[in-house]
Amino acid sequence: SQMLAAPSRPRLHRIASSRLAYARRGILAPTGEGTAGTGTGGSQRRLMSKANASPAAAPAPAAPEHPAWFETYLRASSTVTNLFPLWTVLSAALALARPEAFAIMSTDKFTAALAVLMFSMGITMTVDDFRRVLGQPRPVAINFLCCYAVMPALGLLLGKMAGLDAGLVAGLVLVGSINGGQASNLCTYIAKGDVAMSVVMTTSTTIGCVFMTPLIAKAVLGAIVAVDAVGIAKSTVEVVLLPIALGVMLNATVPKLCRAVEPICPVIGVLATVLLVGASVAQCAGPILDAGLSLQLPVAALHLLGGLLGYHLCKALKFDETIARTTAIETAMKSSAFGFLLASSHFSDYIVRVPSAVSVVWMAVMGSSMAVFWRMVGLPPKPDSKAAEKRSLAD
Image (cartoon, rainbow, N blue to C red; front, side):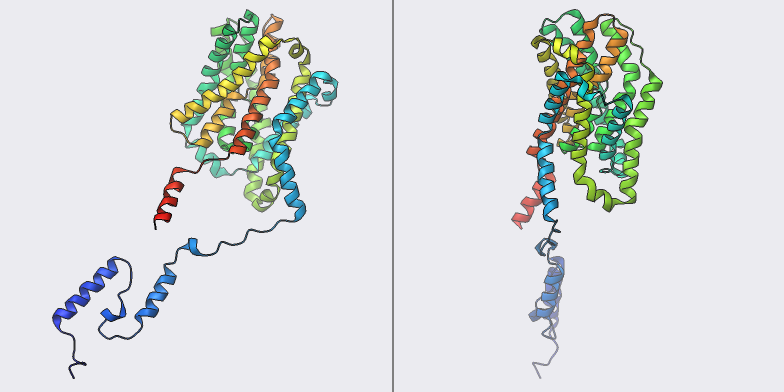
């Protein structure tokens, strides 16, 4: 009868306190703490442990296997992309030796190649990417500052330090005063940067050149450079905005198809850029060949140092690695062919156009080299992922 008697009040109080303590810790009380001893506590604990099991403990689903030919293609694509600087140099060398080899690249085909390049980038992006970028105006502003303040000043400094003639110094400043080149978007993609941010940066500097390039040319060089604002706006829409918008729309409509063809995009972009570099160099092969080593080094340094300054400025302002890489490539890569056109049209001294012609080669070489270097290095782990990893190891 004593065994069947109800537990005393002190014991009930201890049981209630014990259950409350277990409840606060998020676990069930052992069976021995119950009043009835139903024997279900063990099974309850097993069910609770299964329910609270960490998802990380579950076996990861096996990655889908690709056909052997597709794996071979991926390896070949990676090799082609990693050799991007080599293809750029070979294309430029062919254009210098035989400019007629690129005679097929008429203005219409040149524009079409740029549009294909932009479309291949567009299908890798979504509307949310641009919403995110438009909510981060600071990196775009920093790139604009690098494009139209840092680069012109750097061009002037390097020209003076190299002891170049006044006409060559003016040409070097003009290279620093023009907008970013469209090939920077591909290099950003290869470098694992922020492609949407790169597109917005390129568009902002392209629109900005309507007033910034003439302003800098007048203030620094004493020349009035007329820029076709309507023509630039039209080209920006046709070559940059429209192809990217079509790619984003296709990605939103048939995402599976876009994911299937996405591995091909770097190869398409590399081929298009190599053709564009060759066509640009072929148009000004003579001035490039006439330029000596004394000009080659300052032009190469302009693109390299500009990229490094853009990168470290972003790092100093605590931006992440992807934004720093994007800004570096956008700063280093200029629309050198456009600079050649402006110099040819608005400066009476012939040698002013020579730095822009030399820049066509070095801009592509430096940009593609940065892209491949960062592609091989990879992105560092984010700080929050490191903290999460430490917590999981501690647990």
